[in-house]
Length: 413
Figure 1 (spheres, rainbow, N blue to C red):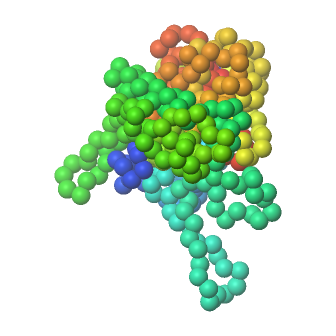
Figure 2 (cartoon, rainbow, N blue to C red):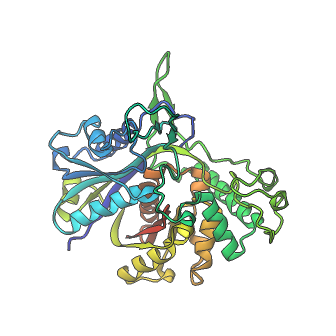
Figure 3 (cartoon, rainbow, N blue to C red):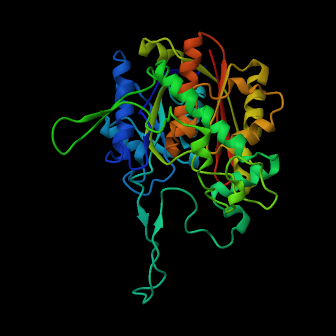
């Protein structure tokens, strides 16, 4: 097996739902990150890229079913460079990175691009086809922005509950109060704001020119959801999003009656964004003329009951560490996607040997955003850049996945 290196990693700033990137198509977002990668490695002949792997969770609209190929063409890659789209829902971007790394490791490729994209703002409504022509009744539109749609009636109902209700179940299981969730969310915003102020995201960000009706394009240059002014007082005023119960407000302990604790403040928002990484083996690395950010060490994937999907990273990380011959004590950073504060705190509760001080040191998705198909690639790139700044070390990127899966990637330098 060949060594696989991450040569560089870029991402767009993350836009809020109907925010700064709302007018930009997802295929254009993805193409922008690929172009930026090529600008950063001018020595590389783009024709040497063996394949483009792109993660995408929805794929129902402007992604045109295979946004990987579309983005490669829009980015100006030679038509001889293929492109494929992969889908592991929220971990699609990380799945793309892993598939590209696997192809390089076994010798099927020497250089590859991997990443992910999602425009949750531009996700369309879909209308199912009728099972008979010209029905007299009404038809139902489904939003493809997030969550279940057109559920198979054979699926057990407890498996198809809303994602936020799954987070509530995790909070029940581990007795995670509303106060703890809000406090975690506050720290995510504070860490992200501090990282922005210190320029820690600069190496991975590529600003996006956004066309205006008049005049020159506006440059979208910073993550849009980070709130430096976030406070526990403001968060305490938010109502639970998935369970009713005013007794759960105000940071009080979790009520036995089952009042809600998951709110818009302690959950990740809806977002738009894209990320891309350049991967290579030893020979491909020479063709780029670059020192790599990090080396791919191991991967892990796991699955559990869908209604507790947020806890799936627990086993995925254990498997990845075992393959890498590492333990939690060897880690310098662990980036766990913050779909919900309850989900992250639940995973940490099941890693008693893990030091939470190395968790998401630059903030997580609660502050930075979670553009589904892009998040996994964003996490991998963020870990790689952190290891490069350190000069050495070991890090993990991991995500929970709706319907009960977890995915993890170990990087070393």
